Length: 189
Length: 276
Image 1 (cartoon, chains in turn blue, orange):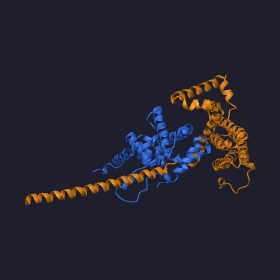
Image 2: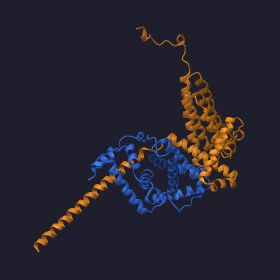
Image 3: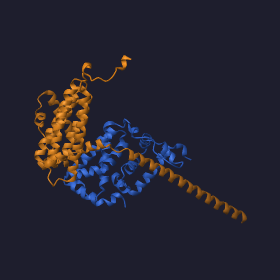
Image 4: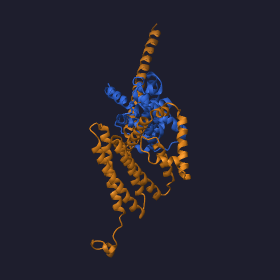
């Protein structure tokens, strides 16, 4: 049972209060999901400034629309990420695909301790990872970012991108294989 | 027959070799996938929002939410039309239209709508117009001095809004206070970029406004009834803490900007190394 499952009822209560325009309850939703949405936007857009704008707008739009959200129809996180995903698409439509990549500021080399394949991670910094993710297909990219940066489950991702869980698993598998090829081409046999 | 058996044995060995190779490949793929997943998760943990951005964004989101709620309560029918009726593109056009009208009315000096919006507070329909007008004004402030003065005007406005909201609904004021404090932070950054003598004057005014801000935060804390939820109290507490640390930073700006005493008034501090 995941952390999300355990607190599913709690989240339902918060969402229902927020649906009645309870600003305080909406603040709890913000606290719970803001980092996940921001990380998704950051690795999708490539710079902090745009990621912050999209994250803020995601929550503003969510508050405007939460009265129309129906619990059980789709997981709440999937509904929220769908808003974020649409805003990212709008952003690219407005500004084009060129982004100022300051994502390298995020940090150093990823720590790693063992194994030949750990070298994939060892050599990989945030900028490389961002560039590699950028080479995936649209759906593969969404799956990787929602799963590992947004913390969504396969079922939640499936609802967010309009696919079934099997497709999500397959997309994830192909995405990771593609990332491995991009990041560590020498290890391909 | 022996040949067949031999071939069969070879076939079995080949199958076994192939199965071993598949297993090795699977292990390799699993290891590669595992390493990548660890890499992705490790990167994700490092790229969250920093605390100050998270709080400032929270204040903006919740103040806009509170404003939307109040607007809906004031005019439910029109709010329904806004949320359900026009499509996104039309809404964008409408927003651009408002921005152009307010900016041009401001520039042109007529400013009917912009003028009417100046007293609006969060939750009122003209409040959006007020903020658009402010953005237009900020865009016209081209020098550091003009920018700092504009930011200072905006701090006063945000504070006046908090004052008014606290009389109407302390809970809404408590949430909105974070936005006022965030604006004071923007003003402090703008004054930090200034040089003398303009800096001392503007920093002095900012100190006065932030002192008023802190008093109001304390008053709102008292006004909040027992019904106020922990989220609202936390928002106010965060605003109070931020306002306190900001006040210190602004004081430091003032101290750094204070002119040093002329040489003959300096306290004796031992022999001047230049004399040696």
